[in-house]
Amino acid sequence: MIDVVASVLAAGLWAGLAPPPAAASGYRVIDTLKLGGDGGWDYLTFDPASRRLFVSRGTHVVVVDADTRATVGDIPDTPGVHGIAIASDLGRGFISNGRSASATIFDLKTLGKIGEVKTGENPDAILYDRASGRVFTFNGRSGDATAFDAAHGTVTGTIPLGGKPEFAVADGKGRVYVNIEDKSEIVALDVKALQVKSRWPLKPCEEPSGLAFDSEHGRLFTSGLPVHCAVRPAARADGGGAAPATEHRAGELRGARGREVELHGSAAALAPRNWSASATWRPVTPPRPSRSASVRATRRRRSCARPVMPS
Image 1 (spheres, rainbow, N blue to C red):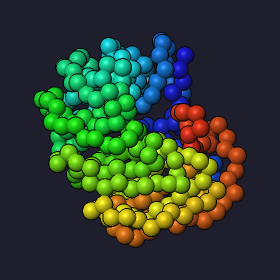
Image 2 (cartoon, helix red, strand yellow):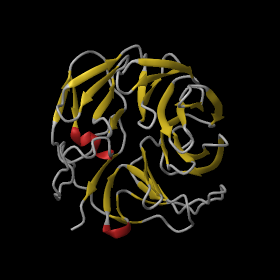
Image 3 (tube, one colour):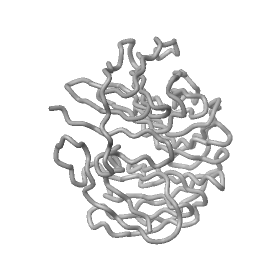
């Protein structure tokens, strides 16, 4: 039996279901969904238009109604599934199948299969970029990204990444950013030209995995190893360098408008649009996180970050 815990979804997948009250301990468990059947799980994707949660389960995708908490469907024949991307404007969804080097296209209403697209080897993260109308799979074994037309399912290009990609995000304005886990860097992609535009080293942060984009402030947040935090001033959009990172054993990031994020593990913040420092850090003594107060890592040794509401 697999438990899907709401606190794990603090990164935004469960946003809008039932906002937890502000508390000094941060996020807390508000509900637990028990999913039967076989198979592990990787990425979770929430579709706000249909109020459905898509859960990868090794060889199939379980679909859950977010309001009733009931399982409403299952998408089979997705060997080695990693991620699910949603294109609400097209009525389509996309699944990365790691073991078959392919992506499944399915209908968001019927959940029926529409087609399949060949990708690079071991596609992991997958995203739909509405600005370009393209879907991108990030292929761990072949170290590249496959781009295909979301409406027609035709491959439009392959982008060599120079390393093993992990999670990726889009800014909605022509750029996609992806962690390169074995190179400890973030790569910025031009979604129309299908080219690498910039590479931003993250050391001393290593093995970056999780990645989030703050569209309001133009910042990327990435998490990795070892147990320290780094903040890096922005790299230029033309690929210029950035100043050396600062690091602490643990840090408290104070962003714009008084927002704070307390970090345990390794994290980096960078602002891709200007040269100003994206944040400042100051050492704190991290408390021992309780099981209900922290965002639980989905993989061994991954960093753990929990939001803290400003006083």
